[in-house]
Image 1 (tube, rainbow, N blue to C red):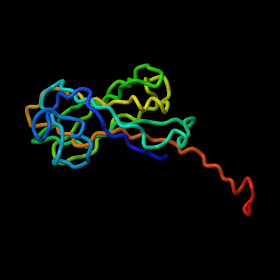
Image 2: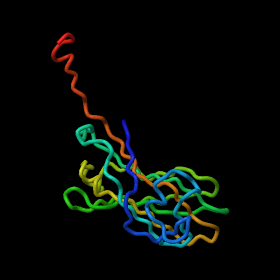
Image 3: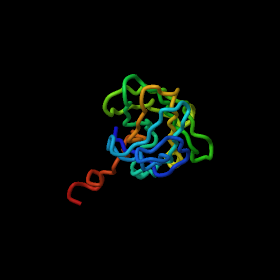
Image 4: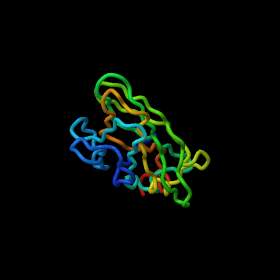
Length: 181
């Protein structure tokens, strides 16, 4: 399977804080740069929701009949001792104007350096319908901090959706027309 990533390109809900001060923005979580720039929360129920840029692979280059999977990934860390919990959500508006919703994954982020955390690889946009290429254009990611943290901050420096797909078959004209045509 081949993969591509979809990075944040807009703010939907911003209740987390920015490493540089003020309210976090999608630009705080679109680079894998650790503690250089990040969004953080230490308060329960705070949300950070971002829209995602268009797919970097054309629809014609994906074998949609083989299906695709979408996985939320984040580079995150926890300051001080203990663990921190965060819920990952895939949501947004599908190509047919229905709601993208796959429930949530509760992730435990441990203290120490940044590590990559992954949600469930979802094969449907709503627990029923297979992903369509047009659904990716409306995909959003939401993080929701679970419980207050008495021991430091939950930090996220890189947030993205990873799309796994089967490349479309490439026509082999040499076989069809002959090697010397």
